Amino acid sequence: MGKKGLGITITQHILSQQRQNPEATGAFTTLITELIVAAKVISREVNKAGLVDILGPTGKINVQDERVQKLDIFANQAIIERMQHIGQLWCMGSEEDPDLIEIPPQFPKGEYILFFDPLDGSSNIDVNISIGTIFGVFKKKNSGTTPDLLLDDVLQPGIKQVAAGYFVYGSSTIMVYTTGNNTGVHGFTLFPSVGEFLLSHENIRIPEKGKIYSVNEGNYVHWDKKTRALVDYFKTKDKETGRPYSTRYVGSLVADFHRNLLKGGIFMYPADKKDPKKPTGKLRLMVEANPLAMVVKEAGGYASDGHGPILNIEPTGLHQRTPLYIGSKQDVELAEAYISGKV
Ligand code: AHM
Ligand code: MG
Image 1 (cartoon, protein in one colour):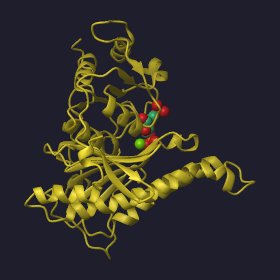
Image 2: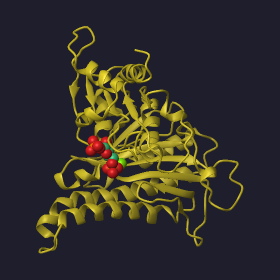
Image 3: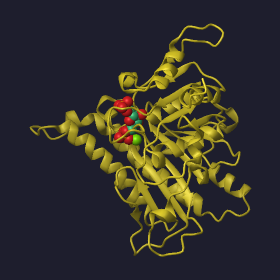
Image 4: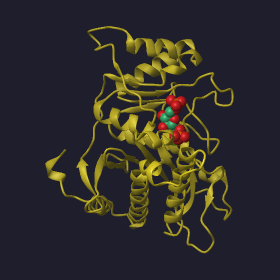
């Protein structure tokens, strides 16, 4: 924790970044500020989630499942309702909505597009494991001249994101964000007593190489030979390269990613043959892979689909899935070499 930064609120931090950019209008600051309010509301609800067994209605079948589903929907609605009236958004895309989310006609529209996964890792809600919200922000494409909302005018490769980040609702609630262009990746911890996010992790840099690999190894039988060889590599003993690595996997991308960002290592969700409908793995390009790829790049790491940078993928669908290898640069480059057949 940088002592220098202690006590700086996220609002102060965003405003100081805004002042460094002479072209900034404050529109982006408004956007992020409102998103933070939505996240605080979600954080409060997540913290209460465990109480449902004690306080929730009794006699109902499937209370737990109900609750899990409700929190997903709650988080989605909290973000949409908070963000739709701020006047800065052209539209939104959420993991929970099959189509783009339009700004209702009674509200002004803006230039930004917000993609988000409202509650990532939601299968972990009822077992008290960290979950989170992931977001990425784009500007509307110049080609978007028609007043109609066309997917082609909205979808862009991740490299065009102007900001990205995430919230983790864990032992404490933390927000990590970047606006790219070498402005760094910064982490803020929510102090519940004052209701403010305070700077706790200034200019996060991910180690060049880590000692952790994070993957759902239960999918081993569904992987191709290259993927198996890669995971076998991390498990093989070799003193010189610091192997075997340790496995760490909680099943919330946002939490697994956050740990590896701070400690170094690689998170993988490879393509598998488990579900013929999802041959490219489970994770979504627009709401999961792209935002975290921007964060990791700005922190000195790398994100790949096994063949090239995640951030260069031209999206063709709102809910497109992608294999994901993300984390310390050397580890991800090695994974890419395995998957693309160079090793
Ligand atoms: P979700 O957005 O519906 O929660 O699904 C994504 C989650 C990720 O957080 C996590 O990395 C992955 O699914 C875990 O999947 P699996 O259970 O197959 O390992
Ligand atoms: Mg998710």
